[in-house]
Image 1 (cartoon, rainbow, N blue to C red):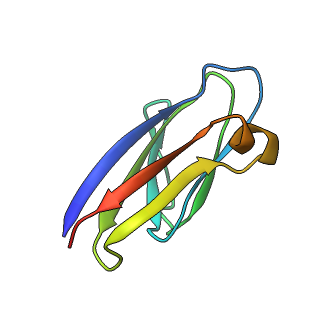
Image 2 (cartoon, rainbow, N blue to C red):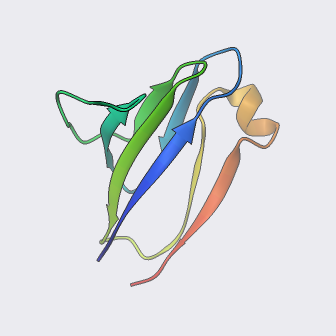
Length: 87
């Protein structure tokens, strides 16, 4: 099992609901301030100018999956990526 921390940075002018398929994550901090309640999530809203640190453990679902902005137009325009998870 591998645990990773990612930093999500929104340098745009609108909110972006960041979504990861299959692997839940916890929000660790927003703009350096610790998140008070670390619930398991699959989507987090990243506001303009915001930096969100998330932590996830890749354990149960080897193979390919995706992450993307949950605004359909943004996803269609390339705000998405593929994850290759090894067992």
